[in-house]
Amino acid sequence: MISDEDYQNREEEIGQLFAQEPRPDPADDVRRINRIVERALFENVVKDTTSFIFSSFGSALGGLTGAVIGAMPAGEAAEGEESAGKEPEQ
Amino acid sequence: MAEACDIETPSLEDLSEEDLIAQAKGELPYKLDAYREILRRHEGLVFSTCMKMIGNIQDAEEVCQDTFLQVFHKLHQFEGRSTFKTWLFRIVYNYCLGKRGALAKRRERDEAVGEKITQEAKDDRDAGMIPGAGELVHEVMQGMDDDERNLLVMRFVSGLSLAEIAEVLDLKLSAAKMRLYRTLETFKGEYTKLLAQQETEKGGLT
Figure 1 (cartoon, rainbow over the protein chains, first blue to last red):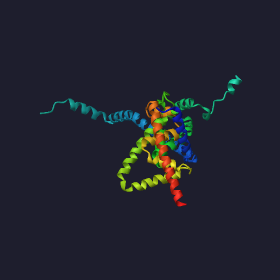
Figure 2 (figure 1 turned 90 degrees about the vertical axis):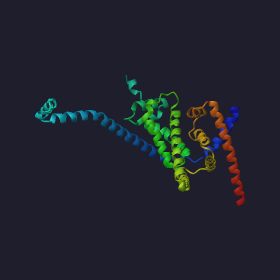
Figure 3 (figure 1 turned 180 degrees about the vertical axis):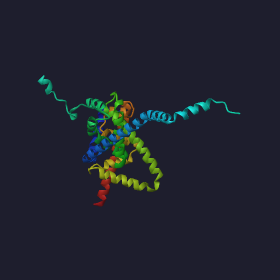
Figure 4 (figure 1 turned 45 degrees about the vertical axis):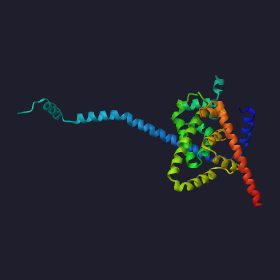
């Protein structure tokens, strides 16, 4: 079993060695932070655009179908209905 | 009435960690002021951790960015059952392990250029860091296995407490303490050996 004192002594000793380690240049922090913010904004736009496209896809498809049916000449549509009900001539 | 008007809202820098997280949750994803403050407080430490765990600037930056984008998208899921720092470093730790695994695979595949990659990593490390007196520490770390190195990085680079390390690694406190103590012993042994070796070499030269 490790005593708290042993543990703390060892930790302090090694901690002092790590304190001498080279540290990243703080001047670079701002550049990296700006890049993260830019990426976050970009991902947000992509996410919004994708969800807009998918949410409007259904209604756009419905509208398009309606427009196609509406654009058909009335006679053509009725003919189609009649011919569907007729028996084949012999 | 006049007194009520005098009450100033504290600036983001003055907010406690809990208040800052709550504000960021309310603001994201369309307002990024509090998120930027989270970055200001934690990004440096996360980047240092990634550098130590991965070893080259490009990949460390990528992992650091991915970590904070995960925070950006998932902060609303943080319930405050652990500290924000523990939650954050769990993400960092997992991303670093994933990236290191991918790098190891790539290295295996490109074994012929393996030496070149190692050299590039060393150059990156030198380029991104302010030179200091801790070169020996880095050398000892390179000789240790991944788990040992991660423990040392979490304790001395990320500045996590023993309890926080236990939480990140999903260990009991006593198990984390035992593991860290053994790692400290190994580190100390290797460091002493390397130091003696260097001094012998110096003595031989003079």
